[in-house]
Image 1 (cartoon, rainbow over the protein chains, first blue to last red):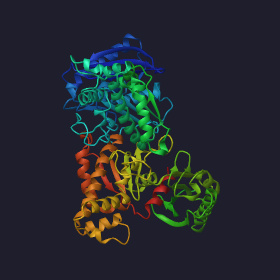
Image 2 (image 1 turned 180 degrees about the vertical axis):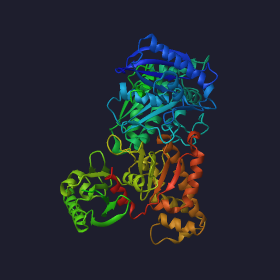
Image 3 (image 1 turned 45 degrees about the vertical axis):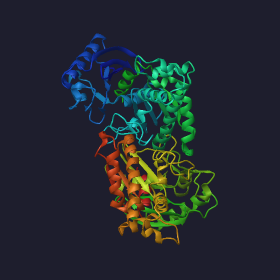
Image 4 (image 1 turned 90 degrees about the horizontal axis):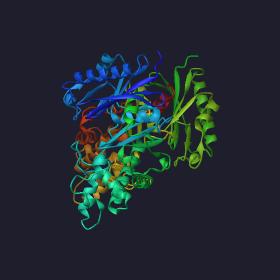
Length: 320
Length: 320
């Protein structure tokens, strides 16, 4: 047997995408199922397992697959379960032993973690963190996720839930109300949702300031609108990015006191905002960082393809 | 050869204490030299090495010692050096290759790290963290130090300087000025110095409030004074601890989002303030923690003897 492939599974709220990945990080073939179409975790895992078995068979990969790596909301690496995942109908209130069930259905060893941790392992295996032993991946999506690697290993904590930096409340005590019920969480500022929120606030607070963003009235503002406006030189949009970068720089200064990473790697839509975000972020980091860490930690943008990265990242778990 | 002892070296600004420690954490014999009495790092290390050699000889431990572990301000585990240690005359401006020189003088392998990291390894080997793979030690002394263990390993970062949580600026943005030149660092609030500072502030801000602390005019107030006053039921002193505990609880809520430790262990003089500190700390932690972590992380007080712990901690490095 020549185990030259791994299966990566990216479970999202709507779709579950999966693919067979080779050692160079190429996705040889892929498939998907709907995540929410099942009544129980067992039904879902059986459908997923069958689809993976079929993919392997159709692509003549039988006996060539080393294992399955899976990234999922609330995925717990320590015990291989998904529990209390608010957006997953079959895992809202119960603990689903995902890896155990999937191994039973496919005969393959299976590892599970959350999306941001999978992204970190993906960067280490195929991406910007190749060869690094200490780094942090920050995913800037709807929320802010984080995957922390120290001494070459994911930090998952005693319960498997380490690395919720989006919910560090450090950034503005008594600040914005977060979905978690507390105030001042980092992701209420630094995420696609946070940027849109800043846009709404700034538009309201500066009623006389012209902005292209004022034209968007027929649907909710998005961070992408802010980026498009910034590209056209819109001052308010640029200010929104300055504010977001300032916040991220302050937060990163604190993250660095914790694990002194060689790099912090930004991933996700907002990470592609280029210098609009990166320039104020670096200025703020430089201003707030403790002198012993100055100019040591690189801030990088993930070079992995956004569409492929979640499968790649999850698959990388299976090489370990 | 039967390596049943390790040498622990606790280098402070004034004294360097060392001892031979057995596997059960008993200090069989000890010695000390002055830290600042030497012009160069080489002179200091030679004197230290000779004193260690003598201790080994006098106590008939030749061939029984496995190695030397050393805790020192700015001690860097990655490269075994001490650099830019403001309080050490011979290491103020230069990089001293401590482990290399000490091994040369003693013939023993040598590991070095900073004091808080040594404390963490000590807790893991002999103390409250025995058997734990994920925990944080917070040393509450003149400043606030931290030693972070994840996956059973110290987090030292890519440059050896990880774990400076005393200089996380999260706690009160634009807060108290710190010795590091920035504002709002945790240790300006939560340390012996921070508590004394809070005392001075509160006394000033509440000129009409009676307090035993007002009687101390002939010398600077200390955190010990505050503790003694609290024990006698002094309201202001109790308020000072409430404030300090509140701050620590908020900070710990954020630390937990990072590494989700099984325990946070408090070490150092201030840690012995009992419920005066612990009760408000736990209340604040409970109030500020993200729900997924609720009631999971134990807050413990180190049970190691304050006078022995630094040597024990340092020595534990040499077992690894």
